[in-house]
Length: 116
Image (cartoon, helix red, strand yellow):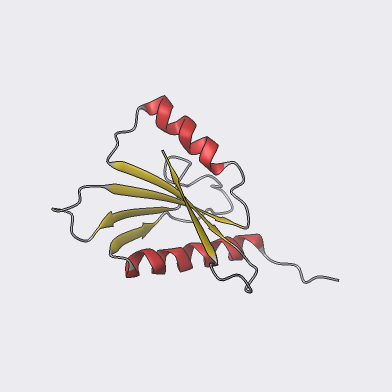
């Protein structure tokens, strides 16, 4: 019988790993406070787990919102597109979905989807 995985811990681990990768890529990263027993929906605008700005903000004025998922996008790109169109989000706000695959045999463990 397969070992049961705590999905909350699995998600938190994926967020921490993505945060480290973004930080190494030159971003200042803020993780959105995790959900609790009393507050389940605490993602940034309901669509983002990580808020990122480039360390060199004078050269590249942008803001990156990242939604982290495990093994599947679970409809996140569609939800982000609806949010962007409903609120007319400016082009300098970038949105991405990062999908972390559990299969350790793959060469690329992460898939990054730019959502426009």
